[in-house]
Length: 304
Ligand code: SAM
Image 1 (cartoon, rainbow, N blue to C red):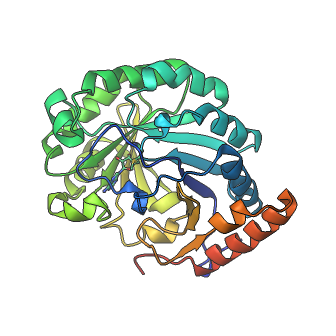
Image 2 (cartoon, rainbow, N blue to C red; image 1 turned 135 degrees about the vertical axis):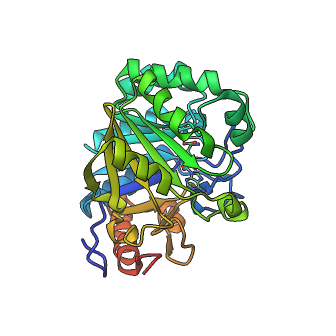
């Protein structure tokens, strides 16, 4: 099903928790109200994903908060994988060295590890936690466990800007497959600290000169370069005027709302009532179909 702007819905981003063991100063918190501590159960998440698949969803991305803090994470992954979806997760990597193998065995296909620094000092300034080396071990464990392509997310800002070139070398040395350089979204703490926003022009000029543009990915119209065997994507939600035109994502919030856009809290369909009804599963699924149809109909680009 296409939305009113002709955009398909192919990707479901699922927030599993708002709890996090890091305090990144720019965190957008997936654009959600984080005051809730009521989280969906694995079965509820499964049902929403099952219905979403009927509308064209092919992949799910688990996020948070920090998704590895959910004790039932492997159960959730197993259920989603049983639907035949691609299952990936974005994580701060803190627990990855102990979890990577278990997650792979549960069916997780791949991970994005957020690593917003090339040095221990900057890492601590960004996250509030002295865990650079531990996250590096997590990245290595992800590679060894086959959670590939292993991608690193680097949200560029005034604090880590001087390290983006070293970061390319670090990623190459680690043997990761992919880097996402992400421009700061003005959402959540990212809005409060938006004065620390830095554009990606310098990075892109460097990649144009020293790498090779291999594609503009369908999702968010992200340019992807090849550089020394690495794929490097530039995610520009702020300065790419056609970012939203290539958005194929919908969201499921931790507390049970269908959300059409990171930026928008008005384009939301609350399904908590449906999920808690004491009715047969097929009836619930039918109500969820209606909710999804509404969501897709009210979906619109944030930047028109
Ligand atoms: N805790 C997990 C992690 O660190 O990956 C998952 C949650 S985090 C909100 C998901 C992704 O969003 C991470 O890659 C993070 O760096 C990115 N992110 C957070 N705030 C952002 C912002 N204001 N602008 C751009 N990306 C942001």
